[in-house]
Amino acid sequence: MRREVLGQHFLNSTRVAERIARAAAVDGEIVVEIGPGKGILTRQLALFAKKVIAVEIDSRLAEALRDLSMPNVDVLHLDFLKFDLGRLNDVVIVGNIPYSISTSIMEKLIGNKAVVKNALLTVQKEYGAKMTAPHGSRRYGHLSMYANYHFEIRRLFSIPARYFSPSPKVSSVVVALLPKTGVFEDSDEEEFFRFVSGVFRYRRKSLKNAILSHLNRLPGGIDQSLLSKRPHELTVSEFNTIYGVISRKR
Image (cartoon, rainbow, N blue to C red; front, top):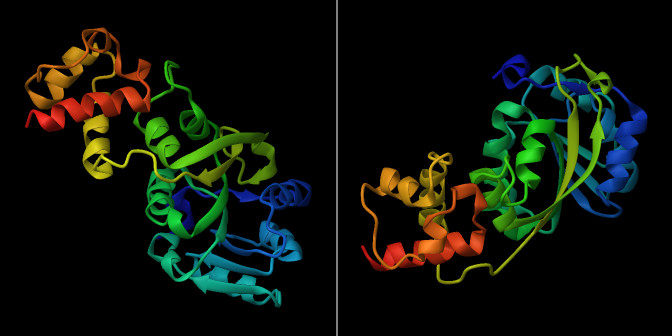
């Protein structure tokens, strides 16, 4: 997979790279960097971290990073989505994330959150807005709920497009993720979020009509005050209550 396909844009500011490294709080930590590219952030992470595992999909970039001979940096020529995070423990994840695979990376982090101490991701501004959107807002959707179910997410700071090469059409935002545990013990997470995703396909409809469109039926027992709302107006807890009713009616 070529870098152009991934839509990657390389950070070109040492000052911004240092700010990211400090925000990631990697002092004495083992860090996995997603897509280090030309290594401008890698150098800053290596100044603070115990060890940096730089996972780079492009063979030429990986070789160039090795040539920098940073003693506490291991460069792996590998797709991060295929990297075995499970072999690590209490790892800090840092990376500038291509828009096209942002959700795939989020899913991987969620699947491995037991070994993730925290993560600091640079994402496209629009994607970051969806990740941090509160319920009831225009941008709130399945991604917002899914990400915030598993992580406490904070928006830290924006990075203008001029600090990347080639310059993207939009600015980026740095977000911090801290894993959450023990949210809904009685829910099957996979089935729950499959239901949520299905309902959000009809986000312009009332919840009643969205459920009808998704399930082709409307189980009884759902609070009528919730059915009159639109999907983006519901909290995770309210969706879970509805899912509980629906799963019992199957």
